[in-house]
Image (cartoon, rainbow, N blue to C red; front, side, top):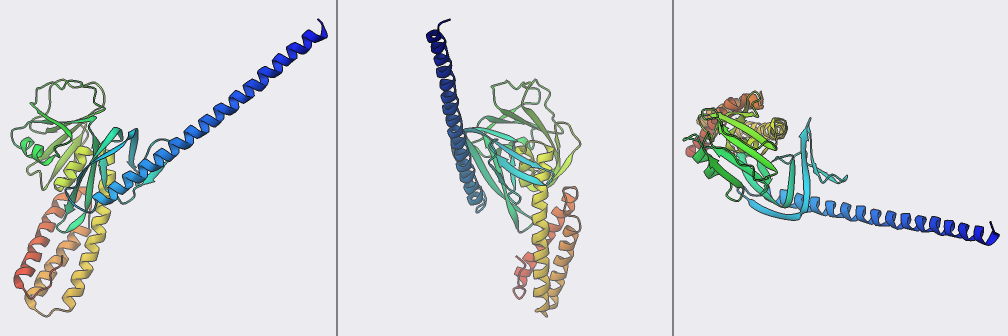
Length: 322
């Protein structure tokens, strides 16, 4: 083979190698820029969502539609750890925010709804997040279902069905079947992404039990916690989020106990002192076991605190507790 031919072959090999190196370099640059852009987008979404969460916690009954890029946000609450992220290393810890949601929210619009959890004074705001890609199906029991439909926000995707009605698969990302223990759903349902919650109560607004996907029942305390169970992904997410609520309950009850003691030291009126004693006793009962399992007792004692506080108002000479 002539030297000129050999040199030409080496030239082509050299051009190919150089071209491959240049191509790899530009592909690396494009990938790096794309990753950086995705990271910036994720950080921006999380910042905006955090702003909405904080602002919604300022007023009960707040209902907001949050427009975001078409992404999937994952919510996690397990073993005392609570955060949300977009799956690319950007996440926001929410150790104190009481947020109930399915584990993954997708689409370009989030629905945020806020309610106040009072026992009897405000303990905290419960926030519920979902999207229009989730469908909530209430099974009619002829008693509590109509009441629940009035409570749920109007802009979520919700429908009422009979116990034996089939649930068509309309390709929602998430289905939540809400049934009552006296009228369980027996019709057909989609094969995937279906979650079931069974409610057993005599009063939606006070306390009762809920069961997730046929598991053993757990308690709920007041309507706001029941709604939390409805919006939560599963039992683990619900209980983890409620643990944060009960931590706040413990803290605020302790503060009100100290406030009651301080007030009673400055008062000589016997009727006032008697009422303060009742309130201190009820607060001690609540703080002795502030858990879901003790929901009924907490509810009853909180109502008694509200009654005693009202009696303080009626007495006119007694400073109120809250």
